[in-house]
Image (tube, rainbow, N blue to C red; front, side, top):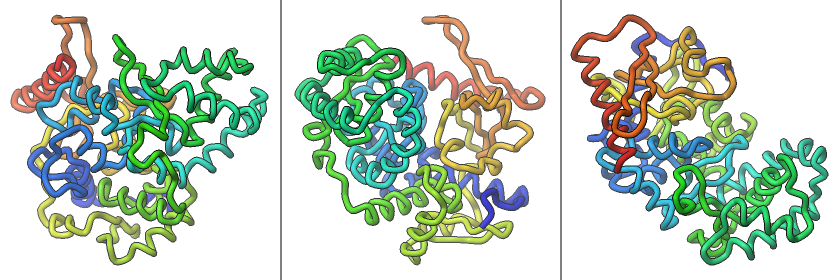
Length: 378
């Protein structure tokens, strides 16, 4: 199977993109593929997707909010405070919002590979396995109960004899997190970007214990295709940060649980209950003001069904890993949006890829951006 699927027709691209909207819970009247009814809480949204990229926490919070009409930022912060949603390092070496019940499965599948990728950096920082093991116990103790701020955790590392100079402290926190000892939970008092670190053993429903790696991979792969499909094996492998071979094997073992179809010579897998939607994919009139780093784009290795290649560098200027906020209309990314001003004077502005939209479409886009501004104040 090619890593990048062959070119699809316009009709096929639109069908795939709009089915992804439905699978991801981006069409309010249609439940996400993994939910029996529309999401009612932030935990429902995250559980439906399994995990959501979240190195930029405010953007990730809107990623939940855009799938939960009427919710405010306070509702997402409350979910982090009660542990129904957590944030941790997971796939691809980045932070994710995840369903806490998947924490053990995620680390069982991805931690070994992430640790291997970080080995060179740890060697440069003189971080040894013995030090990580020692600091895991320091973190477990310091983050028990009410948790610890990043500064408090680093101070505990330093007090135990470890250097936290430069980026060393950050790499130590990641290393300990990948051991399953700590996760990020409630917001630090007065902050919208920083969270407390909590001891996984007491904060997570299963104590953070990893399951069998094979069962964990099957759970994550099935969840990915049901919540992100139609998608390819290459998309799923990229999402998890894994080679193609184990993902292909997991897909083969799941047959016939998932639905599949071949487009442009490539197999797309999806939630079987979406099979009947191919004839009339939903979401043709949908308009969304999405956050940067949203799963609708970042959940796939190949994003061309929703974002034509000629516009990709507008969304990721300089190819530096930063994804701008986007506007999706009928499943197609038609431009970016940005904020200007502060406080009550804050406003949004749509930046189209092509000509300015007509009056009706412009009103729809403005209304979606206004929903974000209300979310920020809620």
